[in-house]
Length: 276
Image 1 (cartoon, helix red, strand yellow):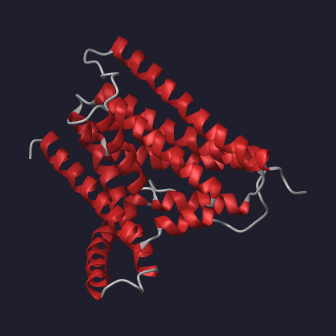
Image 2 (spheres, helix red, strand yellow):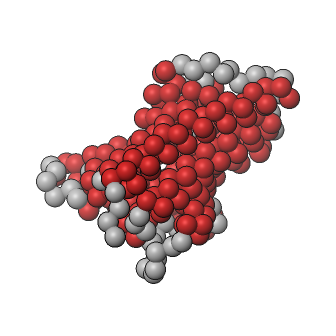
């Protein structure tokens, strides 16, 4: 039975915005509570430049996430499934972000722990960067030879780096491959939608920790939450077009460069923390 436009689009899109607003409010409550029990307060003012930075970085580094959620939506149709995916992914992404914010607030003075967290996040970023280059190579037929060569060289370098860190990453990165089978019911789908973004949210936001010395954390996190909302909106409107857009070779390559840049910056910050 065909669903009405109200059920198939209006309800999920409304929930997308409502959940984002609610999670920003929850983030404000978390930061306010942290400011009560810690000596150095996190600024609760919102600066648009911080929001834009968070939004831009999130959108540039979410290629695999978009493809995964797009495939999840295509295999689980219907407005109830969309609601489960929207709420699950939003809560998972925000929970990972808030967890890292909590750890960073209480343990940022414990240099070895912060250094370990940033190092693991940097290794994850390198692996995800290689995945972005795979998308760039698949659809680069119309691009100039120099672009293909640049992607190929960049990929070879990352492949050598990731070969050595693969034994560590297999315990950190979730499996983003979709398995064939029957569509999932609401709660199993919700749990799956929560788990993957939660792990990615942990990894990604930990990788952004070095940025916190120059930008406002609250505004940056709002940008991350808003970026997730925007991706979900476009995925609801047209999953195939959204996936095709993020798999564009130029966007994929720039996303990979952003991953590597953040990863290297993180390792430089680790060297500073441990006094190298």
